[in-house]
Length: 51
Image (cartoon, rainbow, N blue to C red; front, side, top):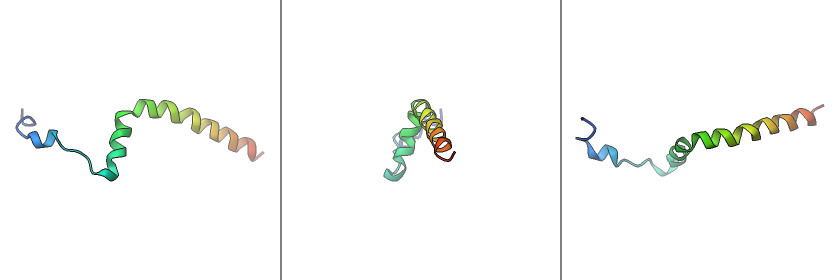
């Protein structure tokens, strides 16, 4: 396998400024399930406040 012949690629770590994107990618389902109700609730409050 060509990837196994390049062990430094497997040990690569993202730079500090983009490390949070990697974390978000690993926890994407949890992020999705948490942000959806928060976003919908925020839109409902916004709709209620602008009546």
